[in-house]
Image 1 (cartoon, rainbow, N blue to C red):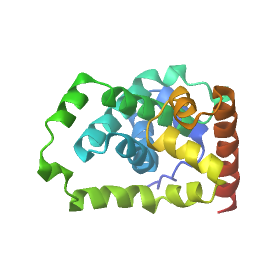
Image 2: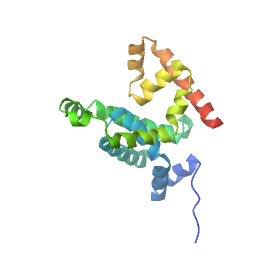
Image 3: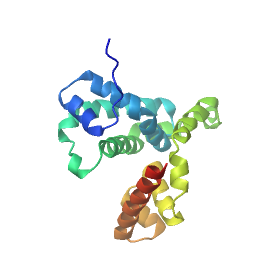
Length: 183
């Protein structure tokens, strides 16, 4: 009986997905679902919606893997953008806005399921990594990735030129990568 080794190299995931091997999507889900769920949940603030959007993200990855270009970035970053865009699209939908208007007081009260969801994002250490950044970078990362703002919205809210926002987000990602590699 052969014991399969865990995949650590994204190119292995990509090869499995492009060959339509279902093991590839299963292993991809096992490796990245918690992280992606955390980002989605930060944006939509509802566990059931975040779970649905997580599933939609992996379906899109499966269907659109041919459009992934490793020269433009990592597979995880590509998937994170799919998830983030899906969550932002959901928050801009009529359904979401209508649900916000009729939200009952019971849903506004802190409950255990919210605490469990928060632990998922904290347990992967993302908050700790972001908190270690220079405050000017941390603020932008929080707004852009965790609160679902667009670069233009961040620029408008913080009264920073759009080019500066883009540059600082890029610098923040580089800094996060350095911090992550040290851990």
